[in-house]
Length: 208
Image (tube, rainbow, N blue to C red; front, side, top):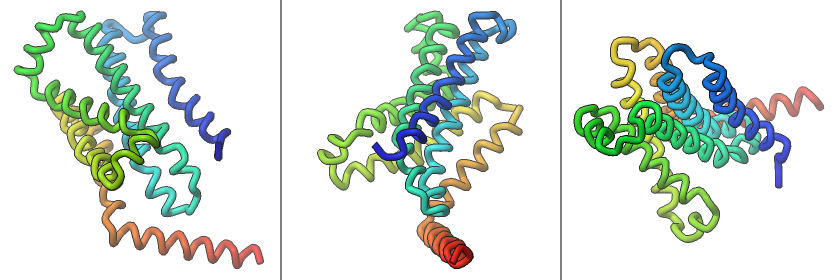
């Protein structure tokens, strides 16, 4: 396996935050409402990982290093894991495992419905993020995984409804998301690739 050490570093970096948050909850270090804090942190962690995953392709184009792409699938699966934990914490600490209350929330709170749609989308991407699915779906695999852009929009809308008046943090996440989407516009992507080639050529000449 190429970039084994790099993959291990990414794995550990993604694993540590939820373990630390669970430890804080166990030691009563998350304040008066630890369940809600845990739900919020897992949700923000999932959004952060989604943005980092989307950043891998532009970074590869800019630097020419294929190590970014090597961990993209792993990061995407970690993003889904955080979302699953976010949903589980919501079910336990907010709903109290009350299915009837979930149906009420889906009806009365639009952000819950939007979050559920985003989860279903990420579930579909996680299930098909393997080589068998790539071979089986063929060209349709790329079309399916481009849905990640729509999922990002749903996640940002979910967060917007949650934070409501306190928009400062949301603006930073939304700005990062828009920037990452813009970097995928063909004209911009080509310019980034050309910039990377020029930079590589200059570095090569400087070492000669």
